[in-house]
Structure formats: C-alpha cells, structure tokens
Image (cartoon, one colour):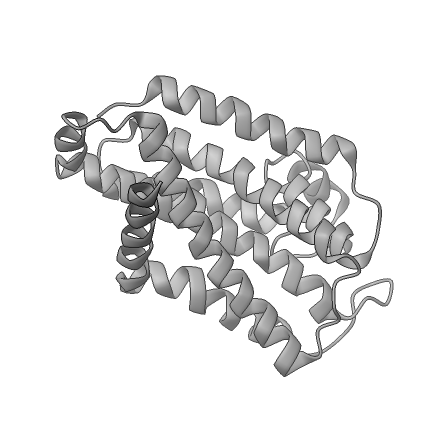
Length: 240
C-alpha cells in the first residue's frame, strides 16, 4: 500500500511540474471563470452566473486532466519504453491504471479547489446545497471521464498522438455538453447534440447537486456504466 501511494505521489509531482499540464488543469480554468464573469449577468431563470459556471468548470478541469493529460502521460511512457521496463516488474495494467487514475484525479481535485476558492473569494459563490451530493457527483464524473481517458491511453502509441486525439475529443464535447456554455443559453439543436455526449451527465449531475436539485438516477447510472465499460475494455486492450 505504501508503495502505490509513493508512486501516486511521484506521478502527481511530475504532472504538476509540467508547465503545460499545470497551466491547463489549474490556471486556465480560473482565467475562463474570470472571462465568463466579467459581465456579472445572471443566467436565464435568474441563477447567478458564478453559481452555474463554477460547477460547470469543475467538469472542464476533470476533462482536461483525464481526457487530455492522462492519455498523453501514459502514451509518452509507452513511446519512451518506460512501460516495457515496467512489464518486467510485478506491475499489472490494473495497478498501472490505478496509479495514473489516482494521480490525475488528484490533479483535478487541485484544479477544482482552486476554481471554488476563486469563485468564493472573488465572486461570492454560494455554498453547495449538499456537499455530500456534490462530492458523489464529482467522483462519478471523474470516474466516467477517466475510463474514456484510460481507454485512449491503452492503445495510443505516442504522446503527441494522444494529445491530438485527446484535444479532438475534449474541446468539441466541452463546448456542447454544458461545461462551458450553460444549457440555458444553448439553442435546441445544440442542446440535443450536447446531451448525448459522455460529459453531459456529469455537468447535469454536479449542477443539480450544487443547486440542491434531485440527482438523476439515469445520469448517475450512465456515468457508472461508462466507467465500468471503458475501464474494462482499457485493461483488456492495454499495450505495453
């Protein structure tokens, strides 16, 4: 147990020390929050903009950490033959995935904490209606998107390819899923398409939890299903 904890700690330090990873997972979302809140206008329906945008941008952080940075990290290890050397150790794909998932989820925790702190101190963010529900929604979102990231990481041969594919998956989805543009401000067609993306249940659930609405069992089941299916396929498809 101590060994895997040390591995996770080392991996997290390596991620945070990478300027690009640290910027896009930690600093960039806070810049986006500042840009989005300059007008201070409430959303249609009267909800303060900060109370919608902070929960939404936590999904942006999770997506950046798990769909872009995580696959690139593992693919770089494959490209540099680090995984080949690990193959000679008792490490299994499941153990390797577990350590990477934990490190990148912790990165997302740091980014989420920073956004919440900026929202609360700088813009009067309201406290979540249920902290427990927010934590459950956040964890399900992290697990579901991590499963997709691990599936991508399992087979991509190089870090550059992983980054390109991760960004190609992340950016269209983040803009139409409600993680950047609130669903209240979207047109009908865009909202329908965005609602079919894997990120949409995450946005819906964490916003509902923050605002004190009932969590959708369907959305939660979808996120759990995505995690189990993609994670299982990733372990089976993994290439050293």
